[in-house]
Amino acid sequence: MASLSLKHIYKVYPNGAKAVNDFNMEIEDKEFVVLVGPSGCGKSTTLRMIAGLEEISSGEFYIDGVYANNLQPAERDMAMVFQNYALYPHMTIYDNIAFGLRIRKLSKKEIDERVRNAAKILGITEYLNRKPKQMSGGQRQRVALGRAIVREPKVMLLDEPLSNLDAKLRTTMRSEISKLHKRLNTTFIYVTHDQVEAMTMGTIIVVMKDGFVQQIDRPQNLYNYPVNKFVAGFIGTPQMNFFSVTMKKTEGGAEIAFADAEVRVTVPAENLYKLREKYLDGRKKLIIGLRPEDIHIADKKSAAGAKIKVKVANVEEMGSEALVYGDINTDADVIGESNTRIIIKAQSGIALNIGDVIEVTPDTKKLHIFDAETENTLMPHLVEFNDVACSIKDNVISYLGQSKKLPAAMACPDGEGYITISSSAVKITTDGIKASVVGCEQINKKYLIALNAGEKRLYCLADAPCAVGEVYIDIDLKHAAIDTGDFRIDPLSTQSELDADIRVGRYDAAANKVKHARNSEAVCYTQINGVIEELPDSLASKITANYTRREISKRKFRITFSPYGVSISEEGIEGTVEKMLDYGDEKFALVKVGDKSVIVSVGGDVSGKVHLSLDYDKIGVTDARNDIKIV
Image 1 (tube, one colour):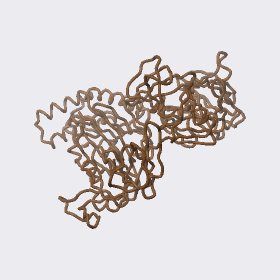
Image 2 (spheres, helix red, strand yellow):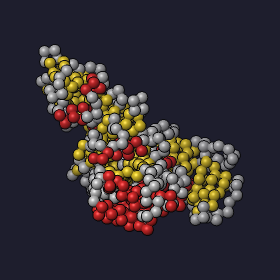
Image 3 (cartoon, helix red, strand yellow):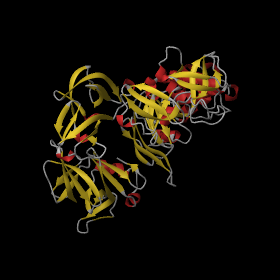
């Protein structure tokens, strides 16, 4: 069995086109991973790089912790099943399955045992003496699977194996492949463009678009918590309904105003806990999403504030249910194009005619809200930020029922506004702001803790769970932003960057230059603002694994680091302190290096010319020309 690790994987073709961009994933042993997305999104290219059939342009690929970028396909212990069965027509099914084992020169006894065992698993024992032309498409696909199974690989790779089958057979084979995964108890990686296949088969799904990973998550989380409009529209049948709106805060929640129709819908506050208040100003352009199954034809019990009138355009009877197509703009031509089209899942047998006007009620608990500009979700599963009302008087900030003096780095004129707090900056402590834990959910190996502080809902991101009950919380202000409308203070930047040249060779101290050297004597160096330093082997190996010495010399790189990945030293990269940032318990220096400004954690006040030393175990490296992350 095998676990796989893909770190900053890229596929860049000679013309500069990127097929795969910064693919990062840890695939655990025995998982069933599905790569899904439209044609040309990079899913098959990723699978081929895993198989070794396509060269990795940049990044690191590991199989069970072993670096595998340079391993040949035969050395990776993987079996691949393609869309095309590629069976030998002149051979029997037995010989087709046994062919690869004979090439590997296994004994006849072992070959026979493996072939018959695979045939039994796949239910094709009685067909072993037939030729491929005597079998149906589904049976031939099982033979292709059998040919992969007998190899007893660590990983099974399947590239759209069911796309040539009819709808009924695809449904049957989906179930068969899922059963096969459980029987073989090995790692499966499956590529498809069919989101139904992805949702019904995968334990983990990777949604891709234009070479970029959009979201990696479990099927139900993809459905309930899509990270952007693309994922929301791609996952689910029929597709989610989308409408352009604005939202205005009200006493009991918010009112949604549709941009292209005279429609208003009220949403209770408890359904908007994860939405930041700045989006409720009645001006910010938003997109709301509603799945057809979350919209119901209204009855007498439906709440008045949630009803929407819909003009019926068509009804499709599906047997167990009906799809009602309509328009929320009741003056619209139901035949023409419209931005206000809506699809509703209703009970089968509903009696409606084209042109009828009905009332529907959306389930606002299932409402999805996206930024109209970025199309990213504004109600994420893992909440990143909290907006809290605050007031400032004489440099004392008041929020959540407490007042405290602002640190010097956050000095702010008097005013009222909001403090935006990172969820990771909210800490559960033994003293501070009184709050109560109302929920705790594990998401991606972190714990999202829901808190009530007075009448305000907050979210805290922690490494350990927390039981429901009374607690105290503290907020790290250096990771908070303050906005009073007329004045804004940004949080402390957690990332700085410097331009760098990287060279491989021998350092000539007299000339302060890296010169050519034989491979056995060559060392990897970085040059930043005229200072040349040797890179540690752990970092150098990652760079030289992706580029030849000549390629490295022609490229510019970016070195990225946190305030704790750099320090003031007696020698190193020269810079000038622009100002000190005093946060009370911690101090930081803003240092100008060339045309860049970087933030450095310091123990006390510093000024004038300084030298910086980078901790190369805590930095990131990016190929600036192609915008490829190496580390």
